[in-house]
Length: 264
Length: 160
Ligand SMILES: Cc1cc2nc3c(=O)[nH]c(=O)nc-3n(C[C@H](O)[C@H](O)[C@H](O)COP(=O)(O)OP(=O)(O)OC[C@H]3O[C@@H](n4cnc5c(N)ncnc54)[C@H](O)[C@@H]3O)c2cc1C
Ligand code: FES
Ligand code: FES
Image (cartoon, rainbow over all chains, first blue to last red; front, side, top):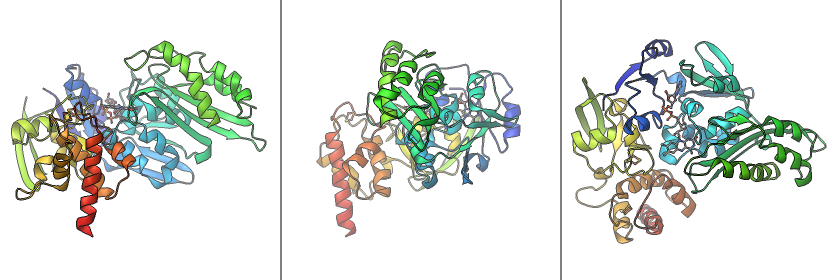
């Protein structure tokens, strides 16, 4: 295998090296080394950054900053990130979680990207040297952007307002049939006052369920009142087909699982 | 392709080798250093047969570049037995028939070892979760789960 690895101490120098053709950033390597092992010759050179700041988790004043190199295992065991632990634990088995990074998950094509689904529901900001982007803008342009992601930021959700669900056939660590994350605020009377819902496997990357979000506003979380939101969940989706499930199946079961998440 | 030096501690021994740039830790261990205990089942991160412990954490050596392990403390199943005496996990795997063809065994034992190092008295669910990245095509898993639970009990009796 001919893969050159270049190691830099700063993101700036690494960004410059990434401009060369055939060069990719190396996060935890669970996708990029896997592709190389499989014979992907489009990558001839990998770039990594040793700056310890990329592995930092900072929680203060209700805000969370996760460095791009923070692993799923580090999130899952962090005492202040309990609300996010289910999403971090949804990624792979224990060894994968020790390697898989936040940065890599933002680039992972469906059926992967379970943690990115959570970040989309949380309205995270994606940070690069060029500045900050809303996660939706970032995800839309991720195939063309080459800049190294240095981290993500978001407001720490209250445990009761953030919900995450991953559906897989093999327990406990199978690949996603779908994943759903929802950030819900309820008014004093129990009606939904704001909703942000993100879906995994319903396109080649995480997408928002905007029609379902709108339909939820003003509803109580009861089977009758959420029915219009569940009916709207399939609007605008283009699920993937892979060995785990067909697009048809994914679309069929989405309302069922969204219902379970909302009522659970 | 230029060769690059790699230096790490393998099962307590300082180890240094020159490998081709881009060599996975799995290939470096097996083909260069001669530790064939980690197995290459899939080279895709899916089977867990290549699992090793790097700085106390379970990792897949097939998805790790050897060059990124400079200065690391690496443990493999080959380093578990001491003076010809099997590690309690190895003993338990043999006694419980948790090994048939044996291909998954070193990876299973590594995954079980990190579990027991952190959680000496695991529940059955803890064991299932800890082994969830490791595939076995022979045993049906139950003997493996039982072996890990037995090793945990043996450890805690020795400690008592
Ligand atoms: C067996 C197995 C099971 C898996 N199960 C799951 C699962 O259940 N759920 C899930 O979501 N994923 C899963 N994955 C996929 C993968 O492990 C995760 O998505 C992981 O988070 C990817 O991160 P990484 O650091 O390993 O990425 P890498 O492989 O290092 O990188 C992936 C891509 O992102 C780019 N990249 C990485 N970091 C950055 C950055 N900071 N800036 C710019 N570009 C970057 C790389 O250049 C590369 O193109 C699985 C993978 C395997 C092998
Ligand atoms: S060989 Fe590494 S996971 Fe299968
Ligand atoms: S004993 Fe054969 S794969 Fe597990």
